[in-house]
Length: 412
Image 1 (tube, rainbow, N blue to C red):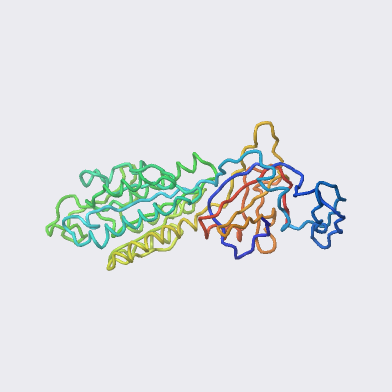
Image 2 (image 1 turned 90 degrees about the horizontal axis):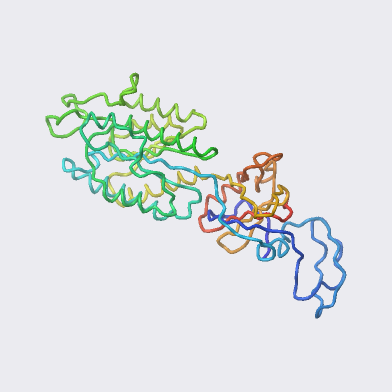
């Protein structure tokens, strides 16, 4: 199978494998017969015809390198020593999920079918259809926490209900969503602060990884101290509510502007953590302030058509996954007894059409921005894909990406 330079329009994929390769002599049915002509431009010297039987022919002279002619001499089948799973730099999706009563409890049961069910099902659809989302894991923090109103404000939301889980096995996330029942107020401030703290901890424990918070909510930040006169916690003047905030916070309240302040600080942090905001229902337009401060745009779901809501939420989460997909590839360990050489590395993509594409090493991502480069050419620790190649890989989940060690790097 011939390998060619990845075009700007190639649909690549997210499956990931690793082939350890070594130098090997090209083989054919017979030894090469006849003298190959010198290659012109960048063609590998002439196409020598297969020799009859086992007689030996003269070797074709080599001209310039043609990337498209990288075949048996460097294929895993010809010289692979071992194969193992490669790893993309981890990406963590920290979901902070509003499960307040307005999502569909007994007081506003009409919202059960228009908000709660399609939102949870859309999230489950995303989890079930993202097993090949290379490097992506997700956690869920539900808010409010169980208990009385003041307890939901002081609860430590930095411990998620479902810790970070690889989407290759999303069942813990799905089970939690199926068992959760909407109830209580909307302590958005402490919930978002907890989610951001959890994300910071992940980044600290995994240097070079990437994390984002996805806030899913249907309304204004609001917590009732006790039952309001009309039986519905809807932020009317006669309702008895509190400034909901963690006990360690003295200068912030459970309001849109103060929540936006928290999101802004995270987005400007080092490393930055973006806050995506997905709103459903008629009272979410002001949430744009939080989304903008968090470095993103507000995403609104249709609360009048459950099918549309479910589909759009799945598509929205997939879009976030694509935006945050990491194009950093960890350099694997070499087999025992071998020595790593930075000039003996190739990155190969086998796309869904069945063709292997060798991405050239392109230290400056010149030209069409195709290829890869090291984070540090002198002392590399990470393989980074150029923008065009990264975008192509983001668009497909069915191909496989391989790193071959041991064969001379194909360089643009």
